[in-house]
Image 1 (tube, one colour):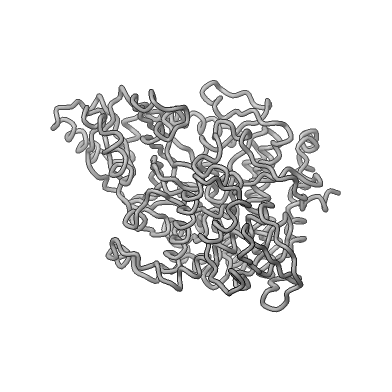
Image 2: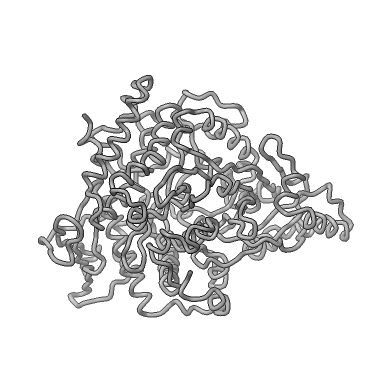
Length: 622
């Protein structure tokens, strides 16, 4: 539980009590450390080695070195102690960061840091203020998390209910995450939220949310669902027959026929700030009718626009459009994409359940079983394909993972494996301690549950997920991962080759990816964006060396390959033991265009490369 009662947070209303000097200073040091580490990792900054560092600066095995970097105008200098680990990961001790300006000691300030290196970072003048606003929001979020207080890693590993209530434990972990995406420096932008919105809807606030419900005219909207699931059946399951009848009666009281409308959930922020203004014509013409507030309470997930039903946890998640700018995208939902969403999920579910290698490792997915999209003719006529104005009003329903649990099992977001509590203890270390296993044995279990299914999908099908921490749920037994559950399917899977024949309604997920880039689905999305951080945490906590980490991964892959000799040609075609691989950079994408990093219909076309990275598996090639 939080050290500050939820009632106190709500009562604070519009207060900015978390914006205190000491919390702000810690947030700035934390974010400047991340900026130094990730911008150096992406070869945007080039720190100069000064001298070896010892003592507190040398964490884990080995010795840190001292580095310096000078601002674009030459007036500011930053020094810090760091170790360079595998995959050019910069392990920086935040306490060693010092700054001078004009030769005098100065505060460590993230906003100033960005402006001091604006030319090196390559931020265009018109985008710099927006990026600074995202940095400011990220700082404020970090200060809020400090002010709120969070359970320790040990408490999260055991569970606030001792594992007796997996729903409560799962959502406690979800709202206790303090970092956001491990690669992106500006990862909590949420531009559009005010302080009251932040307290009401930010995942770290953990406040209960009740969704608005509207009726949308069927001539303007499309509803699709999994095979065998009808509209009325779905809505009565999610809302209950009483609420459906109440909303139908509300329509009749306005002289409208319920049979002419779909019932649709809406994010409260979106209704208040966008729909009542931007969609005013649709409301005035009764194409959209506001019906009231749903009875169920939900909790916002790390993705902001997705909600977990805390009133009835076995009901579906609800994902809604919300027109806030966060981490390189306006977080809308396309009605065009919604139309095919259930069919894509049905197709992938059939593939997974029919694959022996995936089933033997327990891979599962939670399907997006129903989706609804609204077409606003005014803005569709006036905007380009992919415009945020075309993505303001859609929703989807995703299965709950709770029915997949067996007795004694718990759920955690995979993002939690990179979580570090306020005392510096990694959550993953607490899980390993709880398990009673040797760290390398725990790691091998994790690789079998998560890495090998992804590798198999690449080799067998040339199918890739977007398998970052927020998109994966781990099922744990006594702290040990036993299976992975994939989510956020329809917008984030891609079929990259010709090994699968796709039904017409699923064809959207196919993309023309150059053959040499297909393996980046593992090298970039898994190795660089997850394992780079996980291996560093384990080494810094003196649990597993970098060598042991990557040897264990190599052994898992080698054993898998030995089990599937029929895929030998694919193993050489997509060589996971190659000496190096193309270095695809995420912050470079955001620095180039922080309002739309990529065209998701062309995931390869906009990638930002920075040479090649040495592959840590290469040492174990034979």
